[in-house]
Image (cartoon, rainbow, N blue to C red; front, side):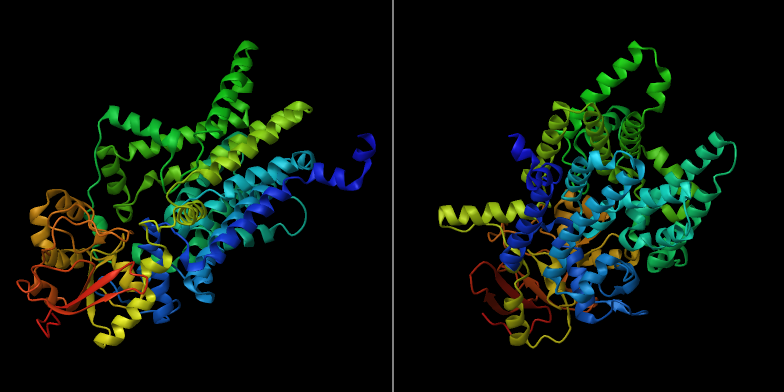
Length: 593
């Protein structure tokens, strides 16, 4: 055994064992998602039904960099309401086909998360970094592979990078310190103001004030860093800032109604989001990370209390991280306190409708930062405690990989394809290719002579039409003119009058301007089977035509088409029979029946 330990390969293996699970996972992800290609199963909610279609529209219309133009959905909205071109994630969609860009985004997110974690850890622990290297990479890897909101994966993954840049600026060590300000100015290229940037700036101001008081002199470096970072966001997201600050157009944000919960309900929400997170920012921490951190919190602070070391309690970085987690969760709950929310909106009118509860988006990073601190202290003890630390972080990684949450595309693709292989039958879910049905819509557009007429979807997401170059009166966007919401409401009024839940959903929110069912809460799904209790459509056809509507693309053969003055142009079925589309013309034209 001693001779074996002296061999170089064995020494290298013990030092760099983490390379194998990381490289293996990256290879597996690329092999599965590129291997199956558009036959993969990709998360739909707030992903395929939203951002992928928007990027595809920008590709189809060549409007990534254009100004003063409209995007062909929701009756024609400003290009400025869509993602900025000054974003690394957007650049992927400028260069690559949509699906390829999406997979590269997943791989890029993993690398950004892991390498950002590594930069920060090395900066904070320069003397211990070599010892900590395995848990640095594995903790960063666990954080990087979290299946968070795909369109903002870079923004989530790069949080430790921002902290690293700010630490470098605060310390200002060595020559060329001004380059760190340049890097901070460019940081918004991998971030997003509404989800993270505005909170980073807020936290940064708090830190600058606290450090100024503690050090008894202004923290000029951080104050300058705040200004530089704010300027970087303003430049990279100039379209968003222009809409927020220089447009007097009333948007749907002004009429969005948020719940106002009781104190008991708010408390339950705080505990739930601390323990479980939310689906857009699922830290998958409940099974391993949370128990480990809570146990360590109790043990470590129990020791401080036993020794009466009050300084230890208040100066332990681990306790600060745990306090930060609680703070973010409390803010999330307080967002549902009506009077407080109204106060914020009155104090800062441009923030009307802004969800300041997104502080919880920082919790995934904080949970894995807390876990890393626990692991470093196990490593400091040496011996078998180091092996325990390695085991904990490996289990945490496995839990992330094997948890079937909303955006775990690798798990969904492997599960569904394995099921089909074993059972010899397809699952009911639509894969990426079937969901967008590009070949089918090329056939439809050619057959009906489609020439850019305004249309709408029934029984399928409008994003499917938008992805395929069809202009839609309907659509999904969290920020568009209130007047258009009211105009579109006239079309769907018959459906809203029949289903109170749907009326509340649209009137109190309205981001999904869809053709709703008059009987079911939802008839839109990513399945081959269409779940609808009747085959009538409840719309005001005159209002539809009044907005320029010509075609309705439906997954349901409408029984009352004639009553609604909708002429059937034709029915079209995909080659694999996964989807059938019925095309109706709203001018009562030729009936293909």
